[in-house]
Each structure stands twice: as structure tokens, then as C-alpha cells.
Length: 144
Image 1 (cartoon, rainbow, N blue to C red):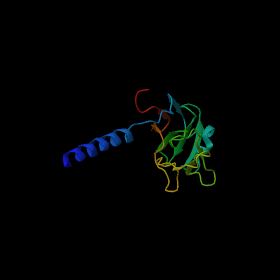
Image 2 (cartoon, one colour):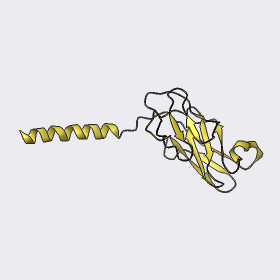
Image 3 (cartoon, rainbow, N blue to C red):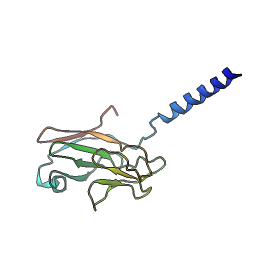
Image 4 (cartoon, helix red, strand yellow):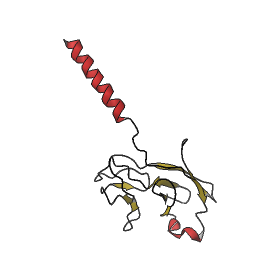
């Protein structure tokens, strides 16, 4: 009898583990562009070696954050909270927090991690951002 319950517990554990690890976020799109971030065209990306800008592309757009002179992050603007179809925005009162007006989710722009008070537990979907000192390349990190 004990072995039977152990087998049931193992089967349930495997079922939960395989379902919880699945990537059910499919709200991203093909991205492959570059910009010259130090030009005056991207003024808000250059505020004190920090800043952010919205760009077209992906599924609902892209947010590019400048963490330092050489460090950039690029995120999909589709909300990653399960069941939410909102479009992410940068909180202009602090220029560091990304919010979803629909589900009230909140994330840090520096690394895409959810804030403690957020309704989401997922990190933001990030695109690869490479800066060579002149151009910033933003693209998908893996095959489309």
C-alpha cells in the first residue's frame, strides 16, 4: 500500500513539474534592428547615461533601457502575467519601473524582474541587446 501512494505522489510531482516549467508565453515577435543611441534622435535614451525609449517591433513594441553607458536591456511590451493581454509602459514618475495598466504588474527596467508588490511572478521577455560603442543591435536571442 505504501508503494502505491509513493508512485501516485511521484506521478503527481512529475505532472506538476512538467506543466510548471512549460513556456506558455508566446507574445513575442521577430526583432532585428539597430540604432545609434548616442545621437540626438534618442534624447530620452541618453538622460545622464540612463533612460529609455519605445520602439516598433516584436508583438506590441519594444522598450529599450540604458542601464549605463555600455549596458542596454530590450524588452517586449506584451505583459507576461498569465492571462493578461496588456501593453507595458514605463512609469514616467521614476523612469525605472515598467508597469502594466491592465493587470497592475510591475517590473524593474534594469533586469526585468517583478517587483514584490507585482501581480506577476515572471520576468519580462528580453531581446538580446549588443552595443559596440557606436550602434546598439536588438534581436531575438534564439531562433524564431
